[in-house]
Length: 226
Ligand code: NAD
Image 1 (cartoon, helix red, strand yellow):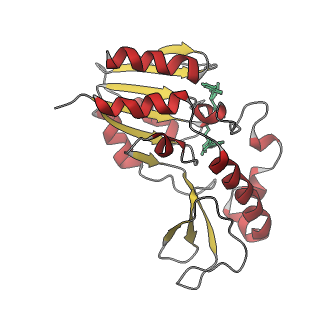
Image 2 (cartoon, rainbow, N blue to C red):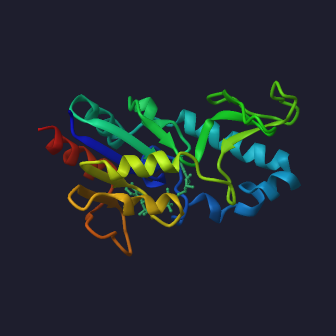
């Protein structure tokens, strides 16, 4: 059996692909209120504004390219069983070649029904506008987990982390729960590395590698592939 690596990624990983992070100075939420743009209440109040916000993010995310850190992570699959659990809603892991990716906060590249069936459609960079309906007759919305909605795939993600020989955490402030709590499921004897620009409290047992993902991750992964 091949050793198992679980990667937990956040918006800092895609920062060097030109996509803004969540809480950094230039972060998205400093320019917009999350209540307006990323909550069921905001959607009820002004769906056109919410669609416009995500249409813009979707187009930008699709125009962005995977960076050297995404590519190094995909290359790990030559020697390890690799599972990516990402808070990112872009598709840069998949576009770099990673084959097992769980998106716990949803995906920009999909639209979904607002009816009970939650049917999903792959739309890639295409916009969603008012009047775009699912086959169940309901308005389509972004397939994004908004504040107050349930994070996806958490049970599988926790199980994957608890079975990993190595856990690599990149570009997340570990401040958005429950996704941030996944680090606690890591095994005592697993090799655990956390890369970000800063971290107030490094989770127990993790080695902190401070710096940009494109500088830290490729050499680290090269050493694992050696
Ligand atoms: P966050 O903004 O809270 O934290 C970002 C972290 O990345 C910080 O610790 C920062 O130091 C680090 N960082 C910034 N640039 C980096 C770089 N070049 N290399 C390494 N680390 C770097 O982000 P988060 O923890 O992912 O917050 C979670 C929320 O943000 C999720 O809900 C997610 O869906 C959402 N989000 C996703 C995207 C995306 O898909 N690209 C973009 C913005 C926000």
